Image 1 (cartoon, rainbow, N blue to C red):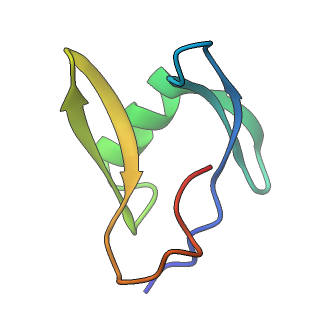
Image 2 (image 1 turned 90 degrees about the horizontal axis):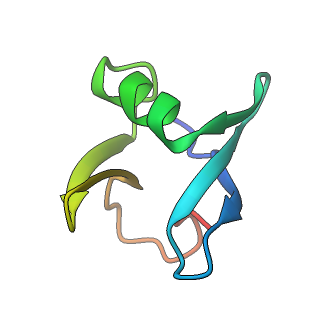
Amino acid sequence: MAKKNITVTRETASGLNTHFNVPGRGEVTRGQLVREVQVGKHPGYHTRDVNGRRIVASNPDGSERNHLG
């Protein structure tokens, strides 16, 4: 399984994650990360629609330690 090491670096006041740190690359926007996940560049993550916005989420694996955040 892929190592899940993408972390949130910025979010809105309402809690929407807007920027992420991708190790070895630095900070990327939510839109850029969504596109990369959709084409398979980050195994272990998927996208989903929440209130009309595409968001990135880690695939479930039973661990509470590796959630985005």
